[in-house]
Length: 475
Picture 1 (tube, rainbow, N blue to C red):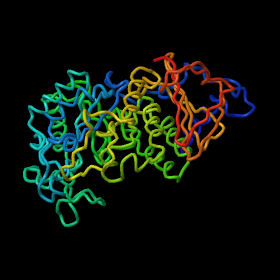
Picture 2 (picture 1 turned 135 degrees about the horizontal axis):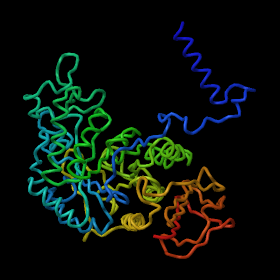
Picture 3 (picture 1 turned 45 degrees about the vertical axis):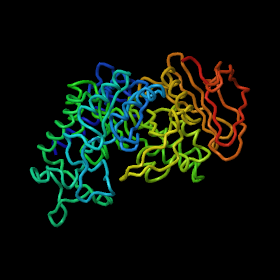
């Protein structure tokens, strides 16, 4: 009873202090600032520092097996100058490790079936070849991150013999693949074991130290406990500043582990619009969550293709149809860090085989097609215009209300004198729209032509089906 009375008395005191008692003198008296308990002070949630070189970076996913006819690091290294010219900053190499043979899928197997975390797949070359690739990328001011598969290994990974206690078991006590998925070529690791956590962290540190790589893309990152990633990030940053990309979509990943994460809901929204299942409201949902739920520092990876999308769902030509260019424009000008998958710069229209050798059919001299030219010019704009930079370095997206809000998606971003105003017709009908202002008003130049344009309250814009315009001020 005494404890209950004490809690009641404390409650009354707090209520009085906050002016919650109607009619009382305290009701008009605010709490003095020197009486606010420090526990109510807001605290920064993000404790990692993004490497400075990621502030306006663009990602390029390189599928070593399919990137060249040879399928090697040495052959890929020869293509680095053209990737630099395209505007690439970070090269993401798909898994580089030897592939399991037991329960292998297809002839060559999945690169995500890891047989040895400390070795290089001889299909791609040697450790020295990998180091040479990384050194060559660094000499051209590009970074290299490795695809890391922490959740599972191949059935014939030596760890199954030396440390069988590190694996999950099924109801019969046997090794088991990831439950509910058709991943029969791999078996799950058990992260309740601290020895496994140390081994995996030391493996991550090995490639940073020995090959000078610049970070990782973490496969199915959410299937591995977050506290493991938090610890691993701290250990890696003690060696050098790294960049970490999570294949997952969750806010808390960004606090102490990952710089960037997947934006699956953006992809789903854009593909729903392209298929006629949704309108621009689907994008409002994504960007609302992005701004309201995620920290300002978070970089959401936006893409129209990657290895999974291309192999299992379809190319950007299949998935986006007439909205393909608009989707690409939004992937680079909207908030997020953009990704281009190898072959998109030349308009590759085939689904690349996943378990077999199926090299990209590059044109003569690797000439960019119109899609590649669009990517190249958008990347140049992103590098130069501070409104389009990543995370906290860039400008927020602000909706510009237009007269066809379900068909036309329009916004502006501004930062340190730079600004972009973007309008995208995401419908199959031509749209003539007006805009509500005045925050986006001003003098611009057309991104594509360089022509001078003034935007004010009388501005009218006509956009063809799938049409888009990007107006630029500053860089």
